[in-house]
Image 1 (tube, rainbow, N blue to C red):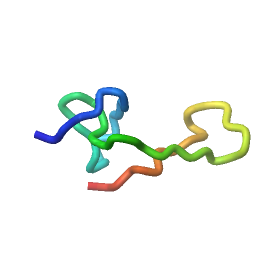
Image 2 (image 1 turned 180 degrees about the horizontal axis):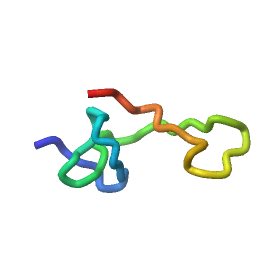
Image 3 (image 1 turned 90 degrees about the horizontal axis):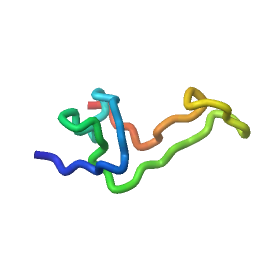
Length: 53
């Protein structure tokens, strides 16, 4: 079983770091990037730690 980090919630099951059984990330930390200088919603940011399965 992969370790899960309950502090990082994630529902992207196509990412190899996702722990599907708990909807958490297995990484200790993640990198988040904004699409522009003044993001107003979650649609304006990406998880740069995403790795496709």
